[in-house]
Length: 396
Image (spheres, one colour):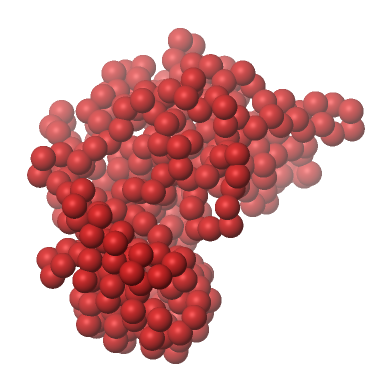
């Protein structure tokens, strides 16, 4: 079969707030080949991503992404990698390429899995037909505006059956050391002594090791498992320096990696104990799987990153679904209705408190387009009188 169409949709909540919540809008991707349809999602700003799909060529390394996908043959999983390589080569200098490619690549895996009636994790060759390994999901939430609100969020997550909770962004790192300590201790109190506590600084300290180090005592006292993204993703020396000071509080990072090479650099030179990969950013499921293999060989824990829909959640679980040693996974619990309602089925906690990707062809997710059609943003891109993009009809 060959790829007949590649469509992107801009969906957004009626009001998008200036907070660290990626579930407020999305780029939904639909790929069709013959009788099959695959769906993917980019973790990206919608308009620049759509522009990278169709924007006019600037020079030989600035082709629109769609030029390297439309009409391509899709007869094996090797074709997915080949198409991805061509996209990266021909759109090398379009910096939004990796975001656009991610959603397309995920949709290709979904489509091909459906066509051969296999889940994506089986196509990756992680094992024969056995069930995927259960992961311990951590409820991924924003810090409360106050320490008491954080305490209540932690207590609520534990009452829902979660054994681990991650708090991030919000006011953390933006005021004083004492205020941050209050937040961390409130989280620990809400979780109780046995809950797994994870903290996400959201790159708030840039590359300042000293200011990050000043937060370590509270994290150690609260027995936090990790401190996530204390610095921007490229500040490898700062990561490495802080890692020598953080003791039992491991560093986590990698969600900003747009290629497997940048993720590998963080493993080799950043001193992280956990590498967090977002399939919606790194180029899709294939590159994420390569990072899992690289991390596994070096004793670094692989963790998915996702804060949007359960379509994205399923995609993020596939690359390491068969690994029993990589036991944690991110699970967003504060989704906006757009992200929650995108699929009619959801990945729910099992009776043992773990989650697994669906044991169904492709990504195993059923889209409910009627439920999210109200969030569709009408977009038209016209250049020199020629319409390059107009929002396609949102259908299966």
